[in-house]
Length: 166
Image (cartoon, rainbow, N blue to C red; front, top):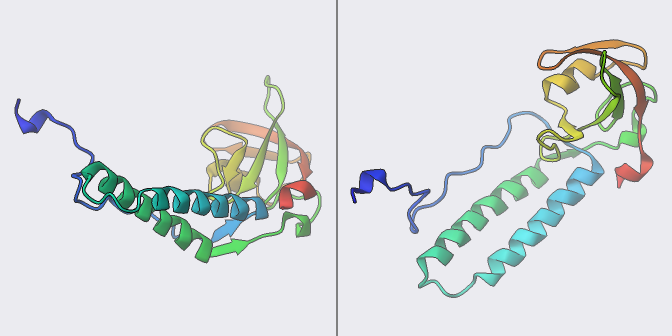
């Protein structure tokens, strides 16, 4: 078989491509900082488990991937700008808020505005840089928003959960 048709992510002795680091300020909730520190600990443990055994190309490749991921996590922790949601003005959408939203003909739903590394694809935790979060920042209950990706709605409630701070 021709090598032209074989997919390879990277050769065992090549470094994997670096993970892109956002150019935006690295705001984080206390929860986000904690999660990133837990990720660093887990990556350290995985890396330590691969020490030795340099003869195995797959283990060398995996170790390089872990080293790349550790560089990313450590850079994000170093650049972290922790924000305490408890200090935000009550009743106004700011970083760290849990915002209950209503769209016409749909059930109410909630989002939490968090740092980029804490956001979830399609989940409740949305990056402060997302179009939805940008449409919500500064609003108060009863005010309307227009999300360029999902349409218009109204802010029902703004909450800052003290338990989510730590």
